[in-house]
Image 1 (cartoon, helix red, strand yellow):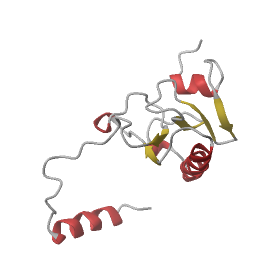
Image 2: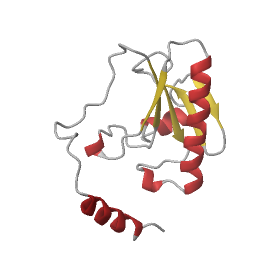
Image 3: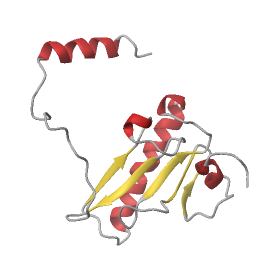
Image 4: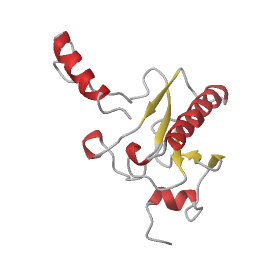
Length: 142
């Protein structure tokens, strides 16, 4: 087995997977530690640690395939009243495997999964703060 990242090994079939999709840009397979039945991963075939390392085509294809996977999961018979997409991009976001991957997670009431919002979530920042941040972001978009 090579010293590549675990997702690279999965894409290269060096580790056993339950595949769902493969094309020239990305692959999808079942998560080996599913949050709920039907939880799968969509990954770029080329190693990319962060979203910013993807080409626009790779990023777009990853989300296109994620959408197709979500439609199929809803129809396949697993318990699924909703779908969450989740990407952890960086340590502060909870990234533990350093190859970009999109989780497609079937959801249903009482499944035990959720996102915890901060205590001050209900407090809205002033419009001037939102406008300032928006301008900074706009100025950096290529």
